[in-house]
Image (cartoon, rainbow, N blue to C red; front, side, top):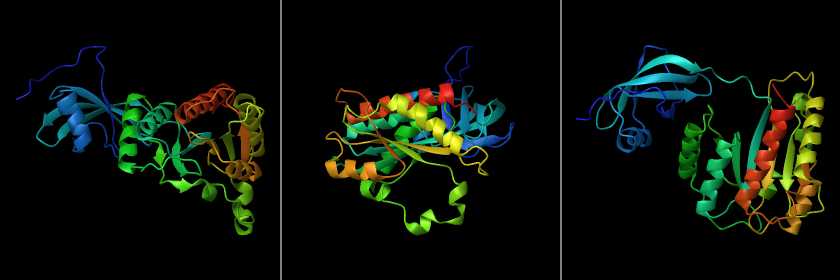
Amino acid sequence: MKKTTLNRPGKHIPRLYQPDLAAAGAMARLADPAQYHHLVHVLRMGVGDDINLFNEEQGEIAAHITATDKKSVTVSLGDLITPPPPPKLTEITLYFALIKRDALGFLLEKATELGVDALQPMTSDYSQNEAYHGDRAAAITRAATEQSRRLSLPRLAAPRRLDEIFAAPSPAAASRPDSATRPAKIFFCAVEQPALPLLLPTAISALGEIIGQNQGVNTHAPLPLGLVIGPEGGFSPREVALLSQHTSARLVSLGSEILRSETAALAGLAVIQAVLRQSVRP
């Protein structure tokens, strides 16, 4: 039997994502195999240890392990530690071409840590012929969420063709009655052409523009932003032409250096987040 342990002040307390949390004082059974393995076999936690449970709707709540068995951990829920976040002013989606397995795992982990709201893998003319495993992607992003103190999991989408994502909107969609009340959308498309404007000044200008467009609009939806990153070989000339013709796309440069796809994605996300946190506060 595992010896009961007590937490000391300052000791690291693990965080676990739970989609549903009961009220303080209630008991909860944690039976997710990956979380159970991490708590019991990796961290060697047991009765008397503390953990935190969280989700975006209910915030982060303290919990105390009261029992363990061969497949689950039972906890008693305590006080609210962090309240749910306020409504988001913006929502960032990272559109990325499929790359090799290890590089993709790194991209998913670090993009989550940088606060991306949604992840959209793409296939393109020069993208890697790599299988995309949604379960692996979900496990990576959940672990990164638990370690980075954020409360929400990024949404994961199935791979789509770049052509499909950036197809021109149909006349029917453009003329829908709600089109005037929906937030503007801007895609920052990183293209390996140093003559293009840099992402930083473009983001500062564009964010001011879309916020101005949506002042007074009767919607609670966040302003959608997209960062579009190509594969190791970049976008093909055909795809660059497609992106340049899209009304919501802004072609930008990340500088004169040639960056790997995962490096470009993280550099671009860091720039956008810096602009948002400095200039666009809720």
